[in-house]
Length: 205
Image 1 (cartoon, rainbow, N blue to C red):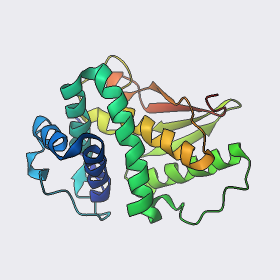
Image 2: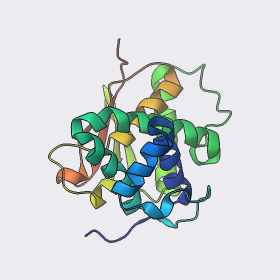
Image 3: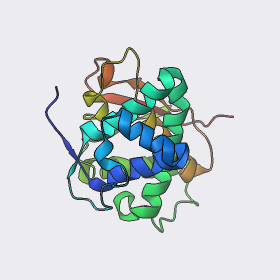
Image 4: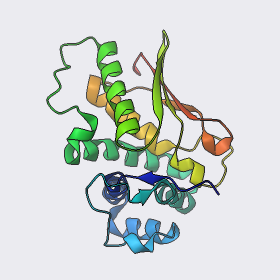
């Protein structure tokens, strides 16, 4: 098994709150039981940045949703959980993303996207203990994550990090008011060296 990697308490707490908003209190209990995370029932981690939670716990919660709903059924639910995760982070831990009061509405759409993606990348590196980098190409941005909770999940035959896809979808919608077809094009859980997400510069029509 991969060596333990630590995560801020706030990140795991936010995931549990997002699961609760999407699946309800009973659904969250079922997820925590299925993921071997019973110790968190009615006992979420505190809302602080201490590195006391683990990537393994985060991955176990994602995997439990997949186990409960099946890989196809879980996809939309996990993306929704990701979208709510971004909203919660913006509201509960605004300093992490550094987006509070950011005047971006006057900027061109591509600059808005890049600015917010740069903030997400910075937060991953500096606050979430998750090495990440942003790459720009003419038609898309690529968000590259070197360590991911999926490393602590069972191997998958296709990319599995739908919570992160949802986070990026909501981040881009927050930045631009538009929807983008974001996809994970490489994933650690099926043998890649990093999880790679493609964010096209053109929104869905």
